[in-house]
Amino acid sequence: MSLLAARLTPLYVSENHMTSVFHQQGSRPPVRGHLLYVSISVTLTTHDVQLWFVFPCPEKDVNGDTLWVWCFPSVASDLRKVLLSKCCLTQDARDFHTFVFGQFCRTWYYITTVEVQEPTALNKVTHFSIVVTAKDFNPEKYAALSRILCRMYIKHGSPVKMMEAYVTVLTKGMCQSDENGSFLIKDYDVRKAYLAGSVKDVVSQFGMETIILYTALMLKKRIIVHHPRIEALLEFTRVLPTLTWHRKDWSILHPYVHLSDPELEDLKKCPGYVAGFVDPEVSNRLDLFDVYVNLPDGVITVSQSAKESMAMGKLHKDIGHLIVQSAEDVERSDSQVIKDISVKTKEILANLMALADKCEDSKITLEGLKQHHFPPATENFLFHLAAAEQLLRI
Image (cartoon, rainbow, N blue to C red; front, side, top):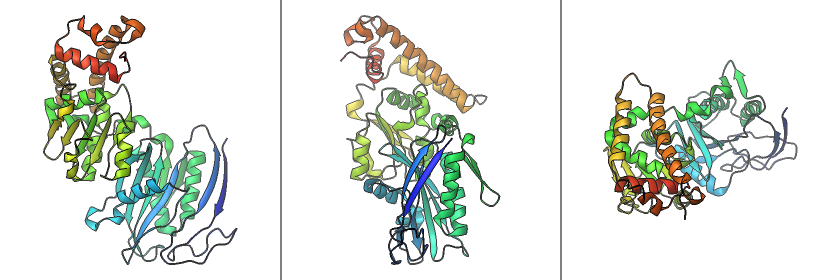
């Protein structure tokens, strides 16, 4: 059973929107250029529905002005600035993107942008974006929800109908409409989101060098990926965490990052990550990466500071061959390739755990590893992997 209580307080209204909204307490007269910003307090008790925050956010009008029109609930200023920088309404028209997603301060954001075709209830509005923020990674789920909300906004020109759909999803896990489509949370399992990309495409592009990406992910290194097209970045970066499927950790993914201080400060808080940039200047930021992927050119570079820990040997060659052979098998699906890699990873981790069990406090030391006379590259890899898996005695 769910309990939802809301208190709505009007503040400011844009001239193009809702000249009277929620008049329980009265509102100030509309002023052109001001934002509609409604404060809503929500108390929710539920066991199976995650609390989402929905922002029908910037609009661009016929004068080219971009306004932050409506917000539920309030949003921190740093996050708002990041969201505006990701929203293509504040950029050139040539950078129009219908859907982007990313992560900032452990919050996922999903931005859907629509061009308004007249006639609609949105008078003088040419484009608008809806932003959904959430704690889980599931682009397909939030893209589907946003499409329904966009249709409602175009038809009614008011966020009230969107709020009704939002509350229905929040309390019932679904919303249905003959005109705007249906949405059911149960159709969007997180595992499907994890497997939505193609690991076979990654291996097809990089071949044996995929082992560099695998090793970097296993050791929780910092990976930067550059491509001038945001769509290519999103498609490629979301796949990389599947190479370490045993962790199922997509919190390391930051697929759309700008070279701004707030975003870089947030990124640097992460011990290891996969971060995507459209700005080629990121290649000069040696402080940000251990591995740099130039996606258009298909080139992977290991930074000087990471070369020792990323040294390759026979073990890496064997893993690389396994990855390539599995990916090149036309009869094997992407999920089967991921499983093949995962089986090999679990074998390595099982051997590492066995070594740890023989050590004091089940923690590995370099001296203990040397007693097994592994090849230098293997010993080096196991040492750094033990650190990544918190099996190393400090």
